[in-house]
Image (cartoon, rainbow, N blue to C red):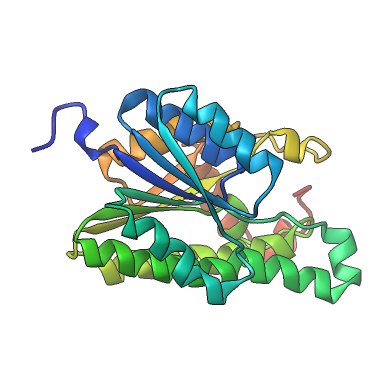
Length: 254
């Protein structure tokens, strides 16, 4: 039974793919304050990953780390399987990805491919593995961190945007495939997110923060939303931009 506030829809156990992501950590912080008691942080071994785990432990959660590399798709099965073997997982947050450097990546195809492989190919692999494991246990939520950049190609970040566009369509289709199985997929589409990782980039008019995205994720979980825009007005803005004639759209400072 769900309580009136939707608290029962918040996870008691959480697996984060992309364990050093500022958005993921802000989300974990918020969920621990509400209901979450067990957190797995999956990422490449690093001092940053261990520090993130130590910080979340101070909030009262049991936190463990697991080796995970988006590019090592052959290891996704064992990495995620190890976590699920320890007990049920209520929510998987897929939050890994790299923005790349548009100007540099245009001149260096291998660099552009790395963005595509990390943000799309790695996500397809991890998403399918996570979905099957959630389905096998009969319940759970897969939250996929997408981006408003995937809604329409922009001159300033079309390599990154195209990878997020692919991820977004994949996640929507996966949600449809899992409908009725007890597994729910929620796609989160924030605009530019201000953080230390993006400090050298120019923020957009509707830029947000990791904490604001975390708040929106919580609300989406309570409502059992399929799509979450951050900020909410972004949905209206992107709809308008999507229907602009291309000749006019390319003149915009996007």
